[in-house]
Length: 90
Image (tube, rainbow, N blue to C red; front, side, top):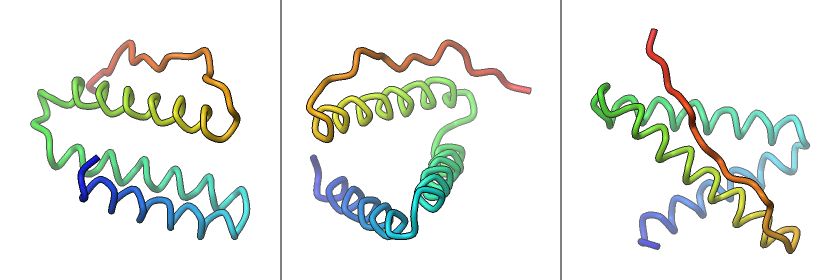
């Protein structure tokens, strides 16, 4: 993990801990806000033609995060995979 990745992870963990002190609703809001922010940043970074692939890659990493946290927090690896079947444009 790069220094930038470690710094980002620490910042996100700090925001999560602050939300956790406010309760479950604040934690859910925090996650929705992060998702919105990530989507907005992806729209800026990626060429629109690359967005379906970028979204798939981001969701894959999201799934890996869930699997890792389930292992660490609960002591077991969940029997699940995260797969994006389609991304549609309007």
